Image (cartoon, rainbow over all chains, first blue to last red; front, side, top):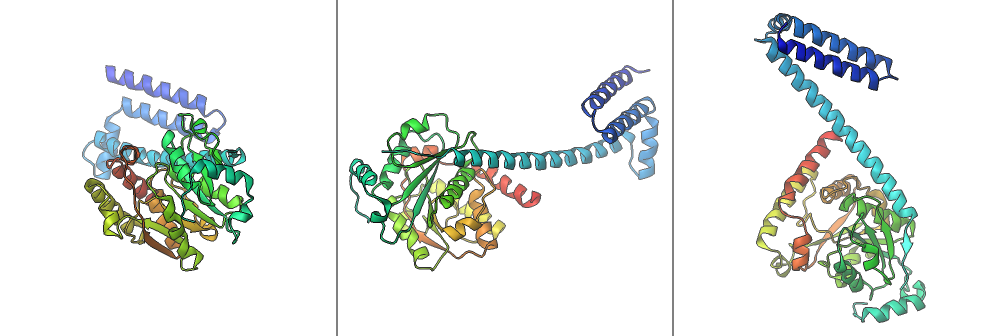
Length: 109
Length: 251
């Protein structure tokens, strides 16, 4: 086994365990995380598999295919996060507004 | 009404006279001032409003500069956001509060003293006359007002006008002017969600979507070294544009 494979497998296992731990209450998400980690490990051990899928899809190299998928998934995740931040922003605003109005003070001269 | 009487005396009169005697029409005008780290200038701005029969609502947007202490003994309503949310959020909070307190008219007024208090009656006039629901101050309607605006600022504002116009379809002569008046009915329809400075353009969206009648009137802006320092640096324009584009995309 090449050194990089060891490093990648260790990383994937670590992230997988982290996901299993933090997604304790969500069975489907846990299963998906586990499946993705497994696929990751397989691709690390047998890189020519990604190349075959890439060729099938008309992409030159497996690494390129991974890059494209990575890009799409990342942008999607960013958008999700952004929407989430906006929702949170809005909720914080509403709470702050309610607090400000409830605690309004009439200053006296 | 435009008479300016020394403010200390006025504070005393305010305490003695019930509201009804000040205002035979029993109209309640609320002036909303969003404030963030304004320091002593805010006090001067409020004092310029005291000769008038308006209720002043200061929304302290989570300032960390003893905002409340600076306002001691002023006859105002003081609200405070526990966190700094942005100017749009502060305006909205003050507006909601004013409506709850029975406002008939709401005026948005900048804290840094760049708007003249004696132009508020002119701002309210078209609403009182039933010609408009919202009246906006503009620096670009009168040559003498325009000449007060520093040249760099003029260019930035022109860009703001074009971007806002393209995004909202509402073309004003001065989109980023904090001086405006709303009827209570219009204020109820406008729910600003852009907490930061994109609210100026969002405001135009509301004008169009709620079919509000609006009018621009000339208003003078006093540029002091303080207001220039405190005001939006021109580079923030890009951030605002980004906020606006994201708002359109993410809605």
